[in-house]
Amino acid sequence: MQAISVQQPWAFAIARGGKTVSNQEASTAYRGPLLVHASMRVDLKACDSPLIQAAGWDPRDPLATLGAVIAVARLDDVCSAAVRGEPCDCGPWAAPSTHHWRLADVRALPRPIVALGRPGLWEPNPTLVAEVELMLDSASADRPT
Image (cartoon, rainbow, N blue to C red; front, side):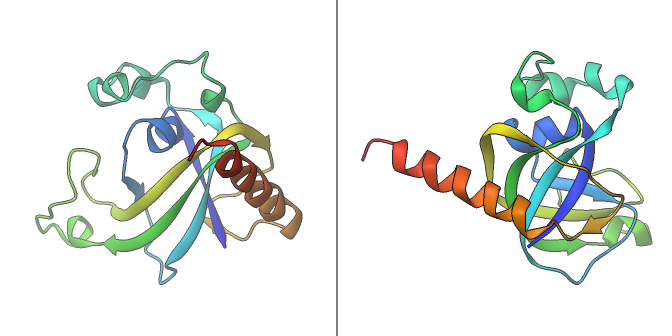
């Protein structure tokens, strides 16, 4: 499992608002499970973005926190067409001139797990992974069938 730190409110939009593209400066060959970590930085201009507002941005929501893992996703694909100046169909969340990391099966955590992040793709320690997995298993067990 790998992790990526994303500024708020973009991390919130991934966790709660249906943002299925993470705009990155670098590509990656990695595919698979990905922890979404809300970094300690906030993109203040983005808080007023119509896309962010439509995603339900609420700074009082626990998943709007900083410095914590707030979701798990699966990194399915990376589109690099925009970096080459070519058109792509990655949708409204895709920024020009960036690699579009396509996310699927995004699951918000029931509550944030405080953790230190890093720039780029990083490997979370086994204790953090185990805590996330335990939380998701507990949340699944609590759902009525």
